[in-house]
Image (tube, rainbow, N blue to C red; front, side):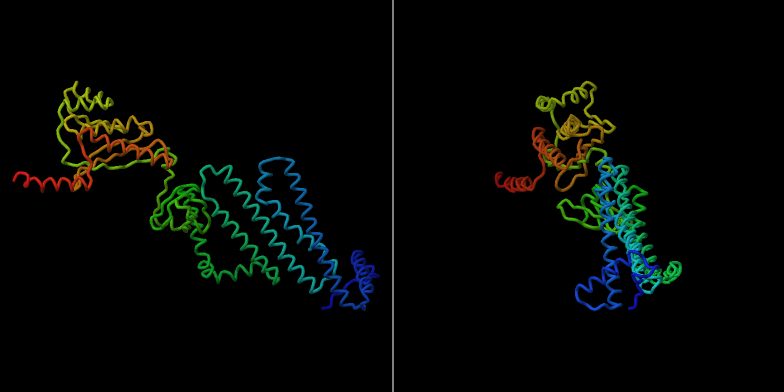
Length: 436
């Protein structure tokens, strides 16, 4: 490699070049090495590049420290976030290649093949550093907006990923054009022939991008939502929504990743509406033993009312009107009869739920009888708790079922169980023997 270096005596040479060459000559003399023109050139080039890298690194650190000091003095939210997400540090990566581009020509006289190659390498380095810094700016904009402005918690990370992907594609095209000294337009024209291959390679990214736009436009999914995807094992809280995956933490703390287009192309259940409403539905069934259902005397009604005073207005109201049945409408109906023990228990269940402070009585409350089965007569309880907390929800419905299961005995009712059936069968089988 023959690199023409300006000799120290040349008036056309740079002062810095002459000074460096003089130091190199003295160093070779000190080491007892014979002066060789090509050796001087190689050492000179290495020294210049090393000095340029060192100066660029020092300048980068000084600029970053200065910006960091300035931002800390301002004590603003944006400045704190710039430091927290290392945006300033990533933007300062552009400084070393700029210093290299400014100092490397000092090693050469005029234009030379080696200088052109080094400038192309440094130019690619500068493009990569620029992309890193601009990507840091994209991340800062996304994080700042997501924290302070994205009150609807829209999944915007996919859009940021697309923007960064486009940025890196453009940087790659420009870097290739710089390396081969070709126009980017020529490269872009050539890429048209590979469009089908590119679409196949980036199929998931393209589908994820389209799905992300659909989910954002239709407000289908937010980070923090509880979702259930029937076609997968995903059942938990959404942790992250990116261009290619939706990350869900299941209730057993396992992490499941689902492609965004799976949520758009198929159905999924989002419990955000339940969370925002502040109430959660309870649907439970008590199966009554049909052999315990029957008419009830007024004396028995009075005995039950004495034990459960909440029934007194209901019973007195029906008796004063001469009725035996009440069928209210609306969200919180109190329905039942005083003719049968099951009808009276149905009215008591309505009143118990309505007066329960842990039940939201502004939502639909419904106690109804379902079709009889071989096991008995199902009594369905439909209501909403006044909280969405999982622990409290389970405690409320458990306490309600425990109370109603034990209270039905005071109404002369029994809940179906396999032991009940066994006992009744044994009694039936023993009856002929007793008669005999």
